[in-house]
Structures are given as C-alpha cells and as structure tokens.
Length: 113
Image (tube, rainbow, N blue to C red; front, side, top):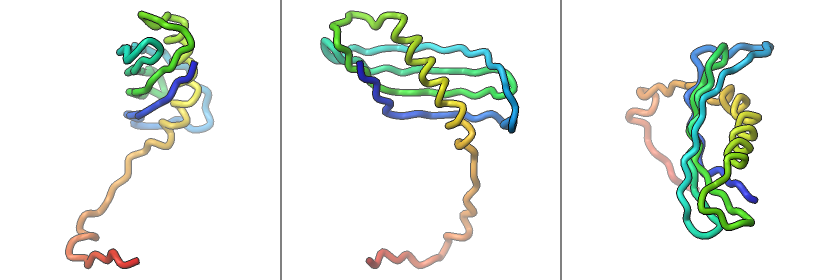
C-alpha cells in the first residue's frame, strides 16, 4: 500500500515546550472517498490536547493492493500512528511570522534575469 500526503495544515500551540517529554491525548477522524477499485482520497483531522496541543488537517491519497469497498480500521490507525511520529516535529516549524508591509510599499519591482 502506498500513502501520499497532498497537503498538511497545522494550527500550532501558543507555546511550544522545549526539552520536555510531554504526553498527549489525541482525537482524530479520517474520511475516505473512493476514486476507483484500489485508490482512495482521504482527509484526516487530528486534535492533540495537553502541554503541546495542536490541530492538524491532512489530505492525501491511498493506493491499495486489494480492492476495498471501505478502508479497514487497521489502515486508519496505521495512518494516524505514522502521522503522529512526524507532526510534532512539523508543529515546531509551523511558527507564525510577521511581514512588515510598509517595507514593500513604493519599492521598484525588478524582474531582470
């Protein structure tokens, strides 16, 4: 089975704990849309609670070896477990930043190569 992530949207926590082991309670759900006999699109929503709370929305696609009418639960659990190995690292990179708009006002635009 092949799982491809097409987009990830993360709402990071207000404060990210540093050098600390945290425990999270996690709520999640996955909705699937069958594209053909062995291909599905999915949307996965994850909400983590605790010292490192965050929300994530992941869109992706699955190509299976078997023809499923519905994706079995063990596949959904495996997708979430694999996402939870990577998402905390991505959350720490998803910090907000600010762009000062007045810096760009009345600046000449150069597209010369």
